[in-house]
Image (cartoon, rainbow, N blue to C red; front, side, top):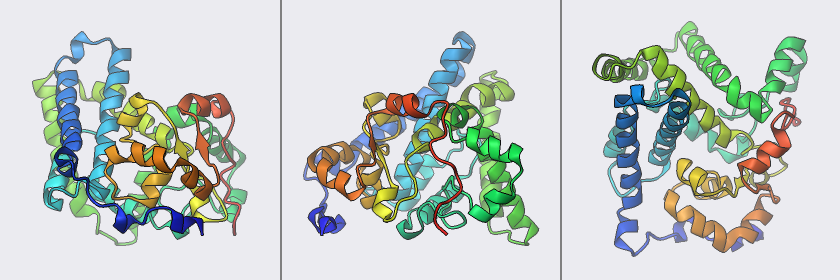
Length: 311
């Protein structure tokens, strides 16, 4: 079968090149993210707000990509250290511990896209969809356009977070409380520096950096999964340029990540080029020629109706 033609995960030995083996590109990204964040916050008053939204959103989305890398990769350092390095909540809205737990559940490929089982799905159960009001269905369909995902997607994502966490508390499940306490304590320090030291109003930080960061992160996830008869056909790849590739740490080549989640991000492009035809056969040629290609198709049209087609 085709799957046996792809290299097994165990066969992907660490690179003999020392800087790859010690994952120095990941260290470089970490330094660049925190240095850029500091510069943008410190000099915010001298930067036009549209440029600050673009740069600030990019840096916070980049930090989210680094957190993703720490969940799966960066195995050259102990787990506690890579957690400490990505833990600072500069993104301002979600504890890293909860993201790690949720994303790990998403990687159970057999439940990929299934509502109620895949924690990152955009699908809804058919029975639920039929009971939604026309207004709510219209909102969810708007969120399935690229313009809607970028503009209202962050608010829907925050709404979902509040509902999920409130639901746990209402059921007497307090397992997330320690993560939230640590997150809020860390966020208080971040916002103290932002407002009291750098002189940047907290509301302005959220408007020009946090919300754009969530929005840019949703760009990557816009159409990386859809329903398909086999798990492999449910994961896309977007062949983008270095601007987006570095931003997403090549997680846009998403089929590679789902097949080999521990592969270092800087190894993904080369692996994709060497095995492109096999990978496309595996995922049913679920591939796009960049994010402009996606925008051309679905800027104002829903990418799919989010009622899950499988019972």
